[in-house]
Image (tube, rainbow over all chains, first blue to last red; front, top):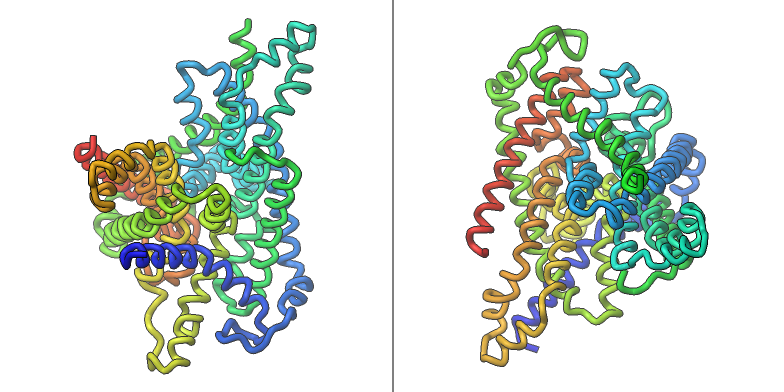
Length: 261
Length: 279
């Protein structure tokens, strides 16, 4: 191997290490037995995981975030799948406009969207009460991911099967439920998993729009990290990372996708 | 009738986007021209006070070039780090590609708070890097890796690298391999192939990636806040401070819009420059 090729592959390996480093470090830090995040760790222990399990604040935050993510994902799945169907099958010359519109929450800076929503909900007199603004924000953030995944799985498929089913007397709804939905199921599932993870992790929207009372996990973690430096935060983060990995693996196993997707 | 039924499919999404994205952004625009007030978010009538305050007070005005430079540096670092990786993945065998793809996407699946937190563990004064260097006696006092532009750019580059690699990858994968083979058979050196063929072909990806990373970087909040420890003042940090802590909505909105317009101008100049050179 020539020297410049060697240097290039060394550089690439460093970049891959750079990508993984902070995640690996958080997991390692959570196993630290000491009272502070020092390095090298003062022995290995799971004590911070027990501390975390005894801490209602973080447990509540995880439950709250999961509930919020499940709700937002459910709404996004319905709205996003409908929009994707329209985009691929019916939009024609308006396709670019539809795509741009649905992807707006992804393209616009999240923090600015959050501020805009805050003002808007104050103007109409709701403010941050009853978590309506927060929930709306999470639906907006997750919508593009459902739309992208479903429209990808719809593209390149004609609607011949649906037409055949309709010709044989199936109602529009039956044709959708028995033909279209099974065909796009992998896309819908992937969109749902993405949406859940995005909602679970999103910061800007939750930071600006959270009302009084419980807060989603990223906000609770951020508040904690501003004043504390114990490995408990690392334990919480590790649990969150594991939850995400479990979710992705489950989706992968349940919906064995085609490798090109 | 058939068109009508089809339109019903897009209705929920269209309503959602119009009500909760388009209208709220109009609200921000209007808010930036409202009069300031004490004890409440905004007062009666309209004024340009918010805009004037930003440019008159150095504390605020200087945050703008600071933010933009931070964004440009982050974009540059992402491009340098991301290009070889995208090239590598585009050429990798199918089995490897999945794994490498996973590594590139992994930061996206882990929340931004956790990732920034990881960097504070690595870069802090008693963090992993400084402790290790000190143990080997290479340094006497900790290197200033955090609470400055260096740390913030490094962490931002990590957070947004996937947004650079993915567009690059899709541009590179659409390249016809025959192009490179033809050039090689005509005697072109690897670097010449890269300069004359690969890079120009990937230009749309470079453009998309740079614009995405730049916009995301200048509007990010958590990473500058945690890694910069409030000592790196970006306009986005000041916007949130004005809106949430000081309750000055017109001023905060004016700042946000000034940042958005400045960023938009840079994106426009960048798009114009790169288009002229390569198309």
